[in-house]
Image 1: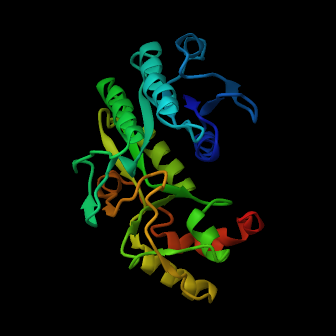
Image 2: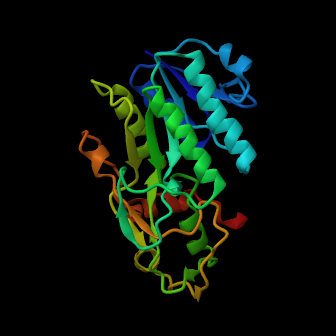
Length: 275
């Protein structure tokens, strides 16, 4: 089986390892190439048409921290070019739980209202619809963390963390390798869940206060100070509990059901001196 992987960054490299470990041939693609990937701008239809054939496609490219213009090109145009060029080949698009803009702490499932409060979120929904209309699969990922990466833990260990107001806001996360395993699981399902959306999050949403309280116990550190909410967060300020029940019912289970379960193992991998 041949996987065409669009995006070979932090998540993409883990996906490559997961599929190759199961005997797949993987062709990684990135904007500039390098690190074993071939160069391609998925916003360029002609460039996409030159990509090799595949049995399955995963689009997990990053926007390069860009705004609406980058989202349009990488996600909306990218998905359109992929489904047009590879008609009939299943596409899995990695979207984001940021499309849920709920602020009341409710549980959000795949059929919950997705009404983003930012243009970038609306563009993700547009790319999702392109994928679904073509019979593809959409995964909505919570905040990704793992070896070498955890904004929450890095801030906590560097004494830069702030509890927003009373700390009630829920934090929804997914370990990078659990995300990669889930994507392989969906690609391997028979029948394949075409035209379906899956929340890709761990099983334990934690309030910000509870998260820092547990980290304090693990690392013998005091609670961070309180402060105002950060309204400039890239993913927007939301307060919701992302439910992964639909995905778990397909047979996938996270190795790290809670961020706390992985915190001790990833702490030594963080470059705290850069904080």
